[in-house]
Image 1 (tube, protein in one colour):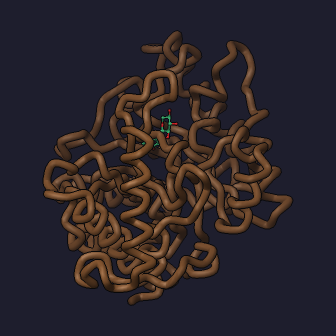
Image 2 (spheres, protein in one colour):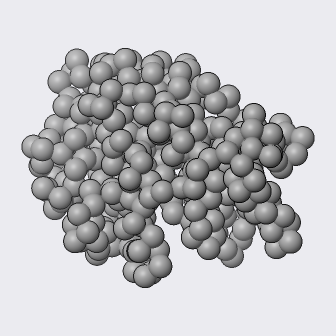
Length: 359
Ligand code: XIL
């Protein structure tokens, strides 16, 4: 999208907030200027980060000011930790954990077992049950053990429910250790490595697909019944403007029925997905603001003991995973996060905070 167009879009959203109600209160409403998110959020406010971003003084200061919890966006996944044969690599997650510790922020581990990760170290043990299970338990013990007393919690299992919401995903982990058992073993191994960390199961599209949400809730119940120490639920909340805001509250209320703490674990609100539904950019942005407010309201309505944390999946729009890599910007543009490319707080943050204040 051209610079001039982005300027127009930017201008619109500034108008929407600065002009207090002139832009049809019904649509965007007037939001007070945003405060640091961690000051408004009734539970820890988290941000997905990389070691490189924390090494940038500007981003480091903004992150320390706005947030009270950090999640490694990808550098604590097997693709990073197991990248080099024969050793576990922790330089980047150590840097993130240290940053958090020295600034009194919480450190949250993401993620131990994910269908999307099938590293060579485990592929070569495929079909060898005993060796596979031993390596699996050793990996979890090594990673969770390293951050014992530092990591407040972990996404032990990520995205276990099938895309269409029917049943569980199959893959390297389930094939070798069983559909449910690979998860039970992971929770037990994590618990053994850190008796205090809160252990969560995390998934996405739980707002837009009630059938998937029902399968997810059944899975949680099955795991608890199987003795897995499940201490909370993560709902990624990668939502888009095509979602009915009412679906957010309905989903979080439904997930809360089990009485477990809830982590809104990877919040971003895409403008691209759903763009065609709206006649104008202003309407599209108004929907995005409404969705942010709905997420805040739904989280604020949870009992305090079920408010684990609210995490946004990145700091500045330009860093979002929803933006293709610079060398191949496909999709070309999106603005799903709370801070613009220059690190300025957006109306989206004000809308989220308005929801958290229960407005
Ligand atoms: C994404 C990261 O944002 C990207 O940087 C990485 O290349 C791929 O993974 N669900 C998850 C996250 O649980 O771990 C994913 O993060 C986004 C979807």
